[in-house]
Amino acid sequence: MLRNQQWSKVKKKLDNFKCDSLKERVQFTVTNYRRAHDQLGRAFITVDKKEVLNMCTITSEMALNRREYVIKREKQIPYTDWSQNRIIWEEAHDWVLEEGIFAQYDFFDAVDEYFQQPIDESLKSSNMLIKIFALIDRRVGKRTLEKIKESILSENEIVQFFYKLRCDAEGLRISR
Image 1: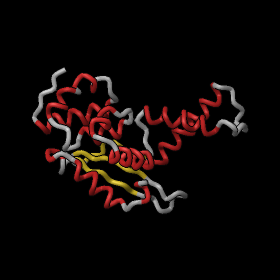
Image 2 (image 1 turned 60 degrees about the horizontal axis):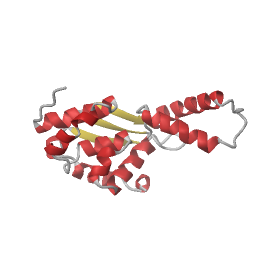
Image 3 (image 1 turned 90 degrees about the vertical axis):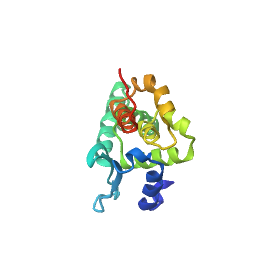
Image 4 (image 1 turned 90 degrees about the horizontal axis):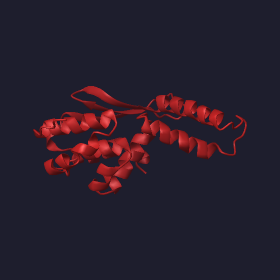
């Protein structure tokens, strides 16, 4: 599991997969808050030194708790009924991820999965973070970027942003 590895080693491996055209422009950063009860913090991605994706554990946990509350209310499950907590948490977590709200641990889980699977699987992943990693991966060429153009239109805004960034960096014209 990557969360237990030293961040500098994980970052170096991630950076090695970046395409040359974005190597200096896209940066991955992890910050831990030592005074936080779990010492987790956030991960974020910057493009040209501007933060474009923030994966804050506190923000994610708040959204997750709100969603769990909504699910319990909709399913009329008493707040004191703990028997379905794991199922409800998983449903809420899936919803939060689909909304593009990520915690630092989601970032590490996505990086771990990305490292372990072929690039074509990463491009088809339902996880936005994995898809973003794949879009800036040096193993993805111009022909592949052209092929996935139509499917990107149905993706979340941040995935489209990274697709456009990569295409622009490679000199590909993507008219809609």
